[in-house]
Length: 365
Ligand SMILES: [Zn+2]
Image (cartoon, rainbow, N blue to C red):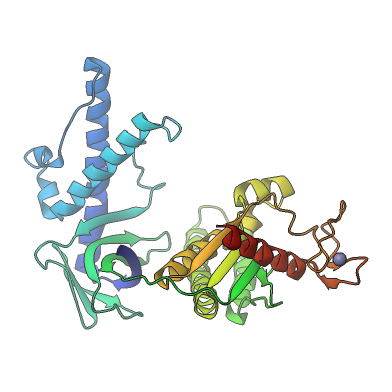
């Protein structure tokens, strides 16, 4: 089976490389917008789609020759994909022109005849040459590099997201240990064994620091140089927090994928849930979606399974010991109490029900 995996590493380009990167981001945006504009004009005039390529622009716009031509080719592919997507399902909206301020600064280049290599502390990239990279994770020897997406974040940091392809022999694991996870806004989840992860110290500290920095920003004079400096600092901290959270979610999912053969979760629609409960951003931010997607591929790689239990299954209201279903259970009831004598943490009770429902699904499959 062919699988893909992307690794994101920090890049430290020198001054010359930074200038070329800024040019490349700009050229990619330029080509994308130029081609989109021509497509629109052609369509308005002839009523059918235009096939155009970036190669045609190089004569007229000499500066395009300075940058990685694969980056421009990928800009074309992105546009074609957005275009096709629009004509296939009109819900996605017509492709938009890319804005210097609104859109992410990034471009993608491909591995062709060994043009990209990681050697020691450097990655060789087309046109840029050797760029310092902080490779904090080793790449398995059987992984084949396919493409690299170079980006610059709001705070000014550079990253390379490197996509690898590999062949994996996935042997179905025997299902012995099954665990149910109940989503929790505060702790991420509570397992049917009663375990819950704790967000690490440094993560909470960073959140406090963010609140302080935002308060300071609100007192600064808008559009002053200090104001912009503070905004960049805040963007940097946001990125730092996001990467800490990602790291935490990777560790949690790895631990569970190693410890259990089958994991059961509720199939939650996070967006609908946060809207319905009026929690807004908080639910989306706690990373459940990211966590479950990490968990899914980690289990998959090990020949293990993730079972999504129907979201209408009454996991919270059912007694995990006798099966009685309560009609009323307020969100404020933290414990599940039942006439049969069952007294459990509400989420743990739900996690057990999710686990049992998954066992039932497996048995009937
Ligand atoms: Zn009961």
